[in-house]
Image 1 (cartoon, rainbow, N blue to C red):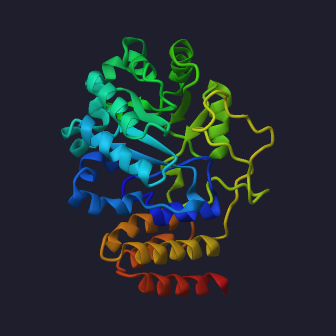
Image 2: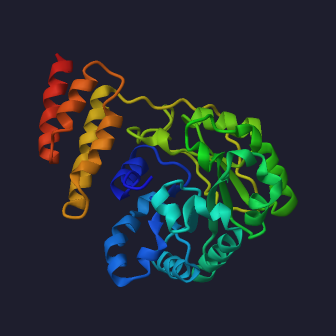
Image 3: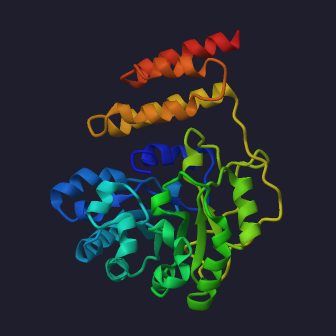
Length: 334
């Protein structure tokens, strides 16, 4: 979720529909280990108190640099350290990180232990996939998941596709029960979070009930929808961080969840709020073009959305975007 779940967007999520736990966009441990790289990347680890509990997600293939990065994250006050061992981006893989870790379990173990050494008081978790090669989709009994679970992780998040599948096929939620069996055999206190094709909170709760996993992670579903975790029936929900209570499974809320659906005017208003916040936080640091992927997400599924998107794609500032949206809202308020 690089250049998506930055502090500007996470702040809106925390304001309009806060989930149980928030993860940062992933950050290079190698980059954080040098003074120059750290200066450039610290903005990606910026967060507000209202986002807590918040987990710093790192990637890297150098144990010593991972140790240093974890130590830095601990000093910044994060509530946990997560190591990405599933990202299929070729640039990341060329560094030996992300999904490439699945081909080097020995190094993966060293990376986990290095993170724990750097942040001994913080829970350490891993996000990965079910495998690398499509021919080994049922590789679970062959060692990768077992290798990770033997490291006493606080949480293991499994994207239920292999690396070669990217997101081109349905997630293999049928494998979750076997993953849980392996967990129960090796590390019964480790929480298992499922990831892949979860469209909303209701769908997530359904998958939890059907598979028995401890939680779900939503990624793409949050695009253009900071209200994703907000119920129409309550502005505040009772939350228990998954990372803090390893000895007991999270409670299953008995009440139903009715998602909050904002009006079109509110959606566009919050989009502009997001744009102004992004500009305030990142001017001179990140290109305004980053906001345009958010414009595409916010502006969809309503009459005139395409035309509005086209105009917003030509903007270069929050002022320009705000004017276009105000003019558009006037046409739908008539």
